[in-house]
Amino acid sequence: MASSAEDAYSAMFGSLRHPARRKILRMLSENPMTFSQMLEELGIPGSHLTYHLENLGEFIVKTEDGKYKLSSVGESSVSIMKGAEEIPSIQAKKFRSLPVRWRAIVAFSLVGLILFASISVVQFASLSQLSKDYEFLEDEYEKLKAQNQQILPWSSAERAMIIIRDVAQIDTTKYETALLSVTSGNRSDMGHIGEEILRYSLRNEKSYIDLVLRFRNNHFSLFQLSLVEGIPPFAPIYVQPQSANVLEAAKSLIDRYSSSSGETYLEDMSRLLASANESSNEQTLGNIKLKMTAYGDNVELLLTYISNEHNYSAKSLRMLFQSNVLKELSDDWFLFAVSDAQMNISEQEAIQIARNAAQNFEWTADGATVSDFTIQTEPVSAVFYPHPRNIPLSLVPYWYITLYLDKVYPGGVNSITVGIWADTGEVANIQPLSSQVNT
Image (cartoon, rainbow, N blue to C red; front, side, top):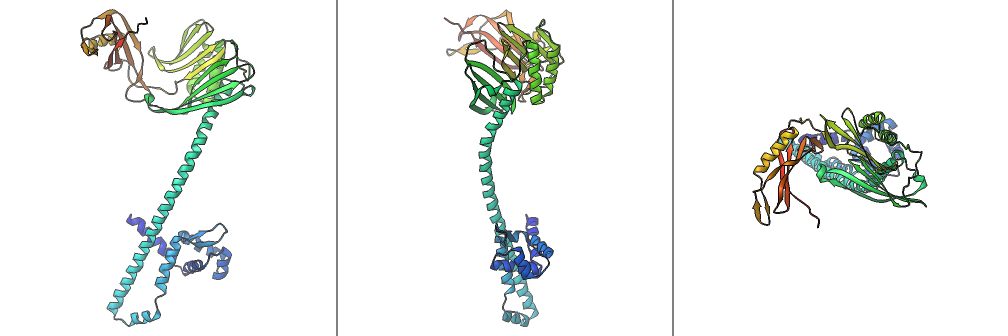
């Protein structure tokens, strides 16, 4: 703080040291002047005047009509100059007639007075500038906030139209397209990521199509298409014909998606789809597994991350075609990472850990504690379901074990579920599961 004040004092006194600059300040204290007027009054070269004006810096400001005038700092400095320069000559004579000792005291007091006044000027100027800066920043913040409220929906809509036109290849010129709603927020269950959901309607004389698009962390995550009005089977009007072969259609879709997003994992998916064939339901390439399921007019293609033959199902990309029409494209592959945690607990080891944990388990139903129950040897369910532990969106190996009881116990409980971290064998969760019986 002391260093900043000293710098300010040095700058001020340095600027006022030159007589031409002091004269400029005195001139401007009377009236604002143009560059030409000051040049004529001072009788110095233009380059010299420019140099002096630059050195005066914060002492002067330039008005919109091109004239120069004193700033608040300049006005205060002129007051100090007048106080220092307008000492009556009689006082000067008296001062010279004083003994040397008293002259020293008076001079010292005068210097102190000038220094005090200078400090007051600098502090006043600093406070004044801080106040102006605060008002300026507050205004800028309000402007930016208003601009963001306009820009963000527009940006989301632009990204959505890229997916609709360039990836799904729907010809929006053949429809009356309307953005019906934009919903945004943070997902607390997913590490507070930002999520935006946009809903569109596409209408023409033959059909009414509803589109839902989702973005997570400003990255495309979901495209859903449904027919609201019209006679199925139907197909949207496309920019160009779509392949009737589902694998070819899926590969072309992924290639277009890759071009718009630039994600490298989509290139690996494209290679897997290029080598896949419809005779095999499951095929793999590196850490990507393709599972193709057909039911009725629907064909689902699920691309999932795998490690040691285990599915990390949260990290996946899904495509659903109905009668060769893309009904859904969802992508959360980009969102999740796979942790460095090793898979150390096998399925059988996880089942045994779950049984041991369930032996001392109890629950409360209708005000009574239930601890006397029997777990069946069979059936038992073990599902490998990696999910985050300490780091959001970082998948850790995890077993979800379901142990079935021999009957329905109080509270409608017929099974116990146990969650086990597959790297440490630690029990993460245990709870009773109630059966749902429809009558």
